[in-house]
Image 1 (cartoon, rainbow, N blue to C red):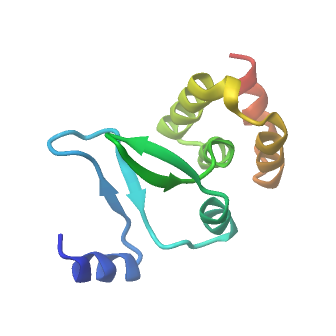
Image 2: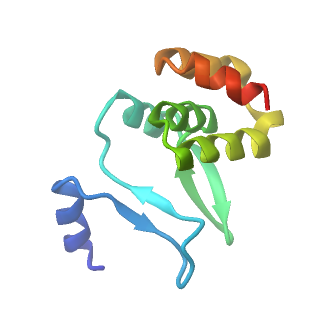
Length: 114
């Protein structure tokens, strides 16, 4: 997709999903920041290395809490997967701070009981 077309899509509020061809996952969502959590994700980004390339991603603690807030089946599965996969490296204090800001304490309690 040409860069100008991508910018036009993003400007109109359309999110762009990126995955290696011909795969459907892992995929990344590209969008302009729309709220305080999007901005926090950018300002607190961490680095992920994929096939030798480094890209900034939102902090895992925020991703987990945000997925809990979205509340869809896939979102909850994503949150559980991230929590299980990265649990030992997560900052409990940061995760609980995001959980509180996103008002997802009940969902987080169920997640931690797994």
